[in-house]
Length: 456
Image (cartoon, rainbow, N blue to C red; front, top):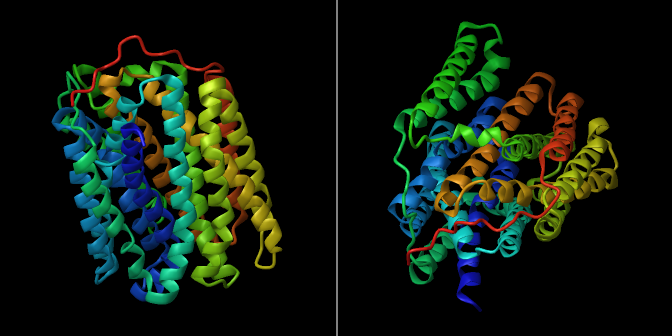
């Protein structure tokens, strides 16, 4: 096997445990609620504490990889993520579980952007890179596929704490292989850190998400909730004022003047808000409304993840040969059609109707990942590959956090059988279609004129 494909495999191992963690934890939510006495908002924080910290630190993780060495930061992330998983499995209360999920997220922020930066610096041709990113996206599908099944088996046999154990052997293996086979590399001119921008991003995301999650309980007009939204607006205004005045900002706002790049960010937010809301609400629907066990619920969602595996490499080939517009059109259309049967689902809806929706939705979601990443990475020189990948990953995590917050708030007010939540997700899928049609590139990207040599 050529060394570059071995490097791709090692990087994909890090994505596997991150994507696996999403569906495994979602399938375990009812068991966590029964054991720790959690409310719906507590379950939302179990997911969003992870995604918020991850979203806030991804750009920093990419910058640190460019500055201090990509392999070094990648290995540090593996240590933190694996340690955080062990701590989650021993959490004595919901509060401690949320704290340990944050530890996991700090490690995850060093994995996703840095691993993708290693890939983009290893595969330098546009078509070869698009196909490598397609494999990267397929691993997401594999993690989604393995997560519900493995989570259902583990929860059924050993309880919810066991869902965090599976990360440990994969994390240790990836650490040892990275030390042996991945060469150290860093950017020639790494950007300086931006602590003020970092604090403003964290404040913005935390304030808005807290307001959305706690709004149904505290009241949307209560001083605490209104204060959160005001704080979020102030942080956004300060961020827009601060970032353009820095020579090397945390977020390069000038990139958003390019329609394709702005479109990719909006598409990522919409698509992953849909996925985050889907995984959260569907778990509650299958186990609490239909009365399925964790294992049965995992088997129900297996077709969705399997279609994601199939669609991701196909999306990579389409991006390499036809550009990003076609796969985004397919993605938005399929996601919307897949969600349509769920907008009238009840406790007695035939299983074949649910499975048909899961299959079509999974295929659509599998098509969306590669165009997002390809557009974002192609928007910057390879010397900024870590930052480019981090921006794409940040938009995904922001979308997931907002999706869980909004859909969870609707479910908290109306119950897991609410049809309004499914219509919100269907609308977001249509937005993926429309934004992709208006902003995506209909032709393959040309090679970048100024490649950044990798220092081994």
